[in-house]
Image 1 (cartoon, rainbow over the protein chains, first blue to last red):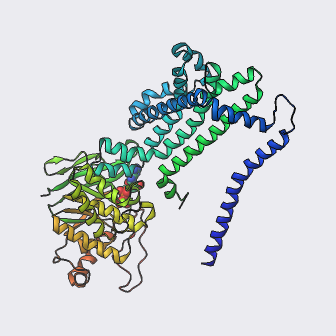
Image 2: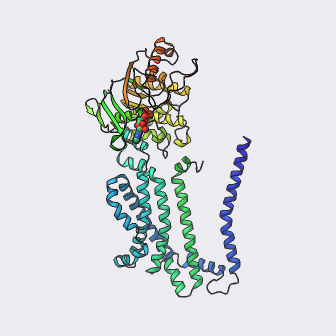
Image 3: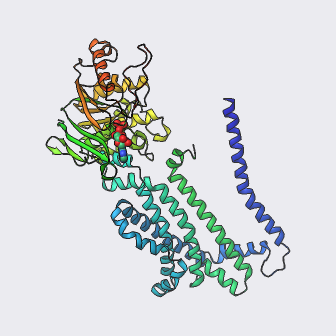
Length: 267
Length: 279
Ligand SMILES: Nc1ncnc2c1ncn2[C@@H]1O[C@H](COP(=O)(O)OP(=O)(O)O)[C@@H](O)[C@H]1O
Ligand SMILES: [Mg+2]
């Protein structure tokens, strides 16, 4: 008993230390940046205080609707399309070895096209509007989700599938209550990879051809030597990326709580 | 009511060109309403046999019939408790959802679904645990969930693959009697694989003894002990002891040169269950 309590205390002390580091290190980094830049005269490295002032004016007031909203809208639309299409196609390919054989070469080719190489084509077909960005975000995000879904569906436990057959669980019920949950951990892993890709592609597509968006604003600020504005854009993109990943992790943890608990990752 | 399940010249092999023969040639009939136990050494092909019988695995040759119909897919009227019980449950569903899902697939009306699920969970002593998930339960409890799922399904034919192997002796006796009662209540036909010869004799109307791998039927023994059976008085009958001895000898006396080594002779004394054959 005594040993167990001591063990528990050590674990909780370690966890406390980890959480402390997780919050403390970024705070220390920001404080250092703030202090080192406070008296900066450099054009390229304005004081963090000035950056944060521009950050507030730009992102909380003036440009929330004109730049932040369009960026997030494109990101959300492209990512949502990738999730729906990737999971749907992945289930089809995962369930049918035949379809997989047929699709393999095509999937292999398409997924290895670098996203930047697709931009000229996307601009040609969709112009420089939202459709182009949504398309390219969706295209790039599709592959990790698709390939992970295929693997997840294909790897489902044979005994579980046999008991599903024995009890006559078929069609939509089989898909939603058995196949998709079984592939859930892999699908989530694919979605996590895709989310990071989607954010990168959103920024690039807005820098290359756009009249709005955070990426567009950040590049424009740089071109017109509004370096403080540029920095406010970079900070916003960093914060957005961090928050979106955090939100995704929380969502994943909730959705797959059975998986983490059954693997002993949490109790 | 349930129909006859018959196996004729069943052969099943695995691997490239079917080089690994798991079942050589098996022939028997499960009579309507019968409780039939299958015993045989580990790896002799018992699980393979059940999977062929249930329509999960196609035979390499021979056939399995339910009534007149050749079984190619698991029939609706059949349920099975898997040896790999924990892998047969859905970890993302609660205990209750695991039991109810097959009933939904069978379009049992909602009120009846709930009743049957609660009843089956109560019968295996898991009503309290119904909102837990399988990974929160011990192995024996998971196995009882799998059993409750089969009971709630109310099959005409129930296949059970070493279902009580991971369950403690007391609960095991209770579940044996529960299985017998359920069988009587619904007139189910039961095909029960076990490595415990006491259990086989206690439960069954007949015992099919399989030879070591690849399986053939070594012998079929009639068990005409009176019913209802009772854990104490049935096992005290001289006929019970005689049958147990007979089956044990039939399982043990197998041709030399098999890969499954002879189990060490248990020390003299009734406490060691002489009916236990290692698997
Ligand atoms: N999926 C499989 N692939 C290849 N060989 C298998 C497979 N399942 C079982 N076998 C082999 O078939 C034989 C019988 O196995 P099994 O039916 O599980 O026996 P039992 O249930 O009597 O222990 C064993 O030699 C086993 O290795
Ligand atoms: Mg087995």
